[in-house]
Structure formats: structure tokens, C-alpha cells
Image (cartoon, rainbow, N blue to C red; front, side):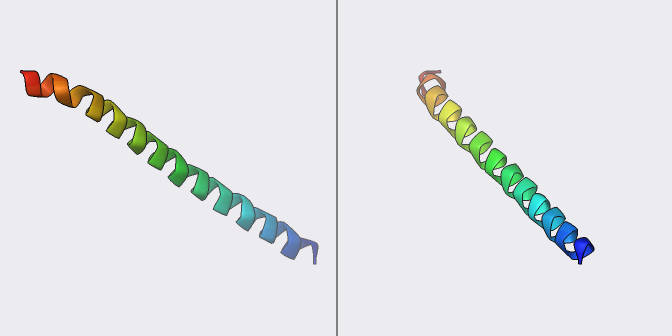
Length: 46
């Protein structure tokens, strides 16, 4: 019984880690997009 509870906790931790990973990637992508948008006018002026 204890093993079952532990494995459920491990599953939850894995899911949270995966979600965290994806959220971080999405956040980085958004930051990069903002960065690119800021530099677009500068690139156009060249």
C-alpha cells in the first residue's frame, strides 16, 4: 500500500517537473519574441 502511495507521489512530481519545463520553454520563447520585436525596427533601418 505504501509503495502505491509513493509511486503516485513520484508520478505527480514527474508531471509537475514536465509542466514546469514546458512553461519555462514557453516563457523563454515569449521573451525571445519580445526581444525580436524590439529589434525589428532597428533591422528595418539598416
